Length: 334
Image 1 (cartoon, rainbow, N blue to C red):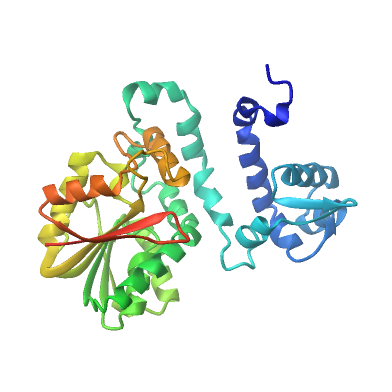
Image 2: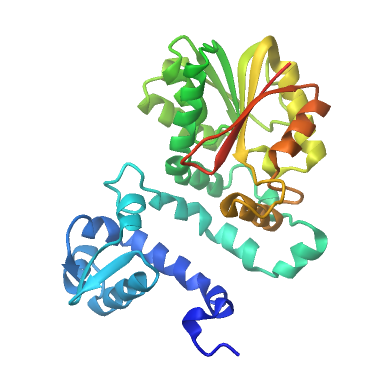
């Protein structure tokens, strides 16, 4: 029997929800940005956060335990990870993603009877949430810091390959960053974003902020049902196929093929584990959230996507990782 609780993985896993709760509290109270480059006492942090000194002290001590703060003589300062990823002054700040990852709609579906969705091989999850539910807007807004680097890397690929697409379709655009970064990289490009109406409002605001609103169009509706248009030079499928089973993926890939011009390209951007499906950890773990929140979604490997694209009549051109993100870009043609 393991007596040392700090080395007991079962104990740690059972109480992992506490880490999420502490992180959420710290972000909502803006503790990481309040500390920033300073070293502050719990009383100082409490005053600036408008919170109880006792509550802040206990929270900050817990944040030290989990490695996000450091402490010397009752003075707290940020760890390297917190400074880079949680201080809003950092260009790499990911604080807002907790608004979606720890949203009640997500947590309740993941934690409510997990054995049930394991038995059935999936769950209704987010599939039964209506298109106008505020959670989708929250998702679009929260994922901006996560998607920003991947979108920029994708746009850089377009530039390096001198692709110069004039007509771009961004399917399930969400925040719109993939199409927006492509438009910023190719001055002649016109981007059409497809998604639900409320989500596209977020994308249009982001397009305006990026200075590409005059070249940004929208199509409202379900990607399986509405007309995509045709003769696109580039179609983007960023982080959408993992929501569906293989026939669903093939169907969307087939719709993309019909909408491409003969020399066009299709980009699939997603979390892709290795063939062993247990590495790398972040990509492999993504399959579990798909099990909990979709009826038949999965984390597909590059080999899976290549096979599905082949069934849809597409040919793999190139596959490349997009570090420092956990995402992979796969390029297909006719």
